[in-house]
Image (cartoon, rainbow, N blue to C red; front, top):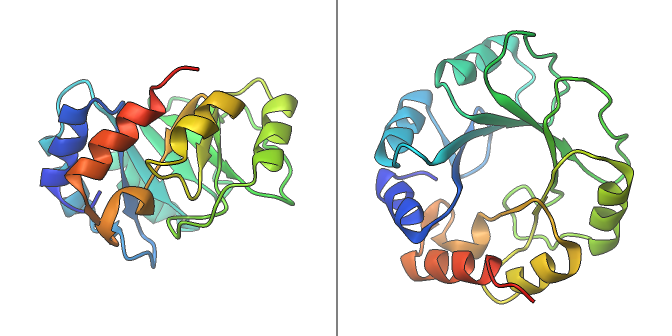
Length: 186
């Protein structure tokens, strides 16, 4: 999310969580103040995820100050033992599965918001090797998310470019269609 109005649309459409990108060269990256505004725009039961590839401990501290429900990180930062946030670790082909106790879920994501399709074989392999919840990302759109959910049964799906008009600007109709299709059962 880059705009509060998109957070409201996603919430009203029935999504489980919204995400903001921080400390990144992504066109979707926002400043911490903007992330806080986006989080405030969503309802009280909406999950709030901070996504970052930062290697800076001080930037990670700024992220934690936003009080997200989860952080999605690719850097193997150790997390505080008294943390109140869930940790989603990025897993890509060639990476070892995280063995740290401070990992609550994995996200299979080689796309990183570029619309590059996920690899179903790799996603299935990760799901077969872990007991952690696995989130699927990469190239998901309204026309392929139902099939991805039906065939792989991920814990959740994540979308960025697949519901956008332009980078960071969401299309309300695509959002509603994506959520509806992601919830279709076979």
